[in-house]
Length: 216
Image (cartoon, rainbow, N blue to C red; front, side, top):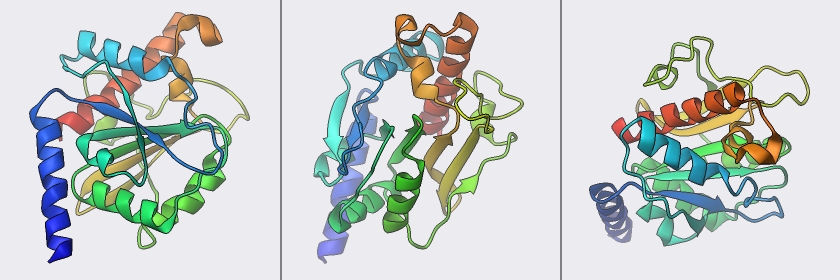
């Protein structure tokens, strides 16, 4: 009975969030990693989306802890950083419930979090694997077309960019962008001094992610 009540509460939270203006939350995790990195990234992405793909995303971005019931207020969560990630058992359970109940998590490795994220996501989904998305996945063919798949924004170690997903009953509920550094490309131009075409490419790919999630 408690499990059923929790499921209904989750659905109510998500329905309320989706029924009003769209919102994005930043996931705050433990372990010492810099979950707060790229502070100008999401505000710029939201502004770009609202101007270019007809979204109505609230420009106010909330920080939400992994284990908090407040994550259910956000249909879209974003997670990034460079270092260690740690989920407690209860946090992993909370995140799993959120994702299986209709929520979505975009994880963008800003270089350095990969081994820690892969370790911790197994706590959330011990029965699932990260699957690489091919260039033919519809997330790369929204308002903006990326025929080669995930773009490379910042070069660090010459590895190719990869997009991984976790699926449940055919739904993509988690996207992990690796060796791309999308978030750095979303930041204010003065932060990294990226060429305008590189920054535009990053924002367009981010807009595709937003569009795919909110229209699925």
